[in-house]
Image (cartoon, rainbow, N blue to C red; front, top):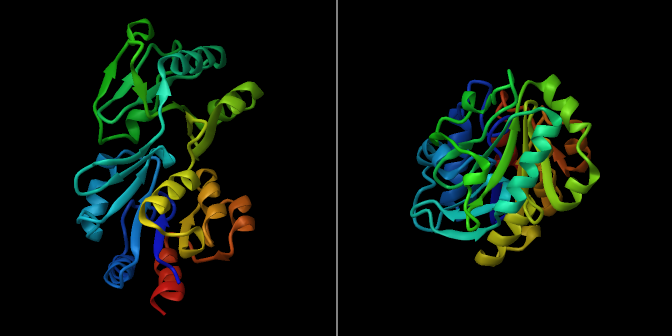
Length: 269
């Protein structure tokens, strides 16, 4: 029996216009009414998904969200943190050194804002085009205090530039951090103990819900861990091929009510 549904946003819950269809809204509200936990699981901050939570009625006591790709698990009504994994000052300095070597812009983020250290010449970050929920502030890396902590670092550049940079990342960085693409032009670098599967494990432990009682839905590389963790992993019809191969079921695309179709099939029926 499915007791928790974890859903990625872009390319999964949202259609290509960044909207949630009426059919999907109805299905998810019916699942919640049935007592199933409906959890948005995303790389965005809580403020960045507020409108979607409100639209789906997921801001009540007992509602949760997994943000920063599993780095943060929060109550949606209060923002109270259930689980958090962070990057330290020294880790941020190391990632920034890497960005300079690769000639790509870096940003890093905490719960309140996006930080913008100096970018490579003629290569500004594209992150402002997609991050609208948090303010941006410039910062010099030598001004960061020893006690500073960030939830994630990101490289955001054109797909061609980013893919070239990714191919040059030393293996030592993969040993020390979780590194994943969440969009074709966005690379996220997080604490080694962070991925969506680990975020689900933390929430499941808090709620007393086992992996086999979870259904997860996603489309991209950063969804692989939660598809693998849950008893029922569902890949969108538009998902990358490795995700489809790992999933137990492939639903319709994000523009053809794929989330609603899976929820109706496995939860409501």
